[in-house]
Length: 354
Image (cartoon, rainbow, N blue to C red; front, side, top):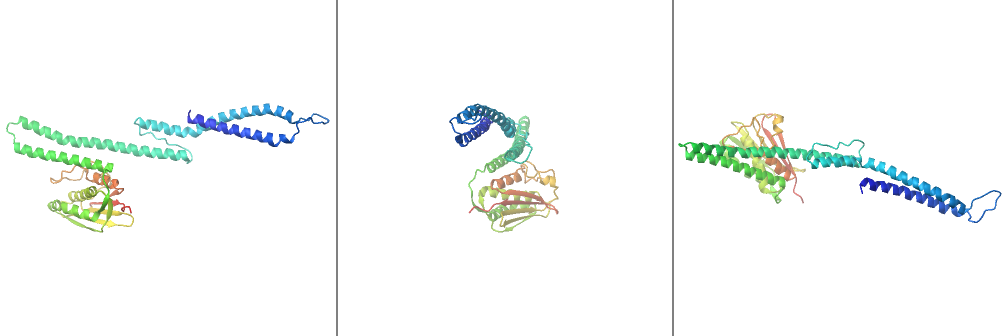
């Protein structure tokens, strides 16, 4: 039985029970005052039996009328009440078939059904955006993984047809291409691990991780002529030490390689604020337009104006991985272009639970 039929029977049952109760009240509280014996008067005066014989057919007819009104009115009212659920159900069916662009868009005043429809529309919007992002990511990842394989195949074909090939140079070049493919694969695995939150949480200190990341990347900064200044408060969070270490390393590495050609600088600060814990990485560099900054956290988005040196064969996943790690730790990553040039990257993480 459908929900509309159940509601219709419920409405009709309420009407019929109310009618029976009203008639019972009339019979109990009024007819008991009328005597059942013959009443002697100048004209005919009905007694209790006469009233009952006259009242029962009319009462039965009225109950049938009430039942018909209850069924008909209940069916109409139930249909109007369940119409929003029908629209939500059709939208859910279309979503199950793969059409995520459809929206319920329920009109009318705010009530429980309107709130449910709005929540469902919000869920569809987020799901559509997530699916589109995953499709773009899969396409970009396939392209990035295909590139080193295609390069290796081309090099092997050329070497096979070249009798005077330089085997040592071929091996070195294949080693570089293979190392890039391994780096990309490891980055994809790390990104997937962060999104699945497949890690154990433990107390960690952001300031210590920042110092370790800077110490690891000092040789790269020296080669590129970039000075690094690291300082800040002891900032304790709860999460995966390797993942948070990767987050800070990615930010510092990104700040070093996307910097001025000469005289660049990177500043790393940790803050223990009342509302949250923060790590801030700033660097010098060219002035970045806002539309470019908004795309830097997208996977494989290196930016049209961002250069890549010989010591930085990046795969375009550094900031994307940092953002996913921050989200996996219930935090956020904020990018802000500085007016004087360069980028300010702030990661907000919650305080550890008591």
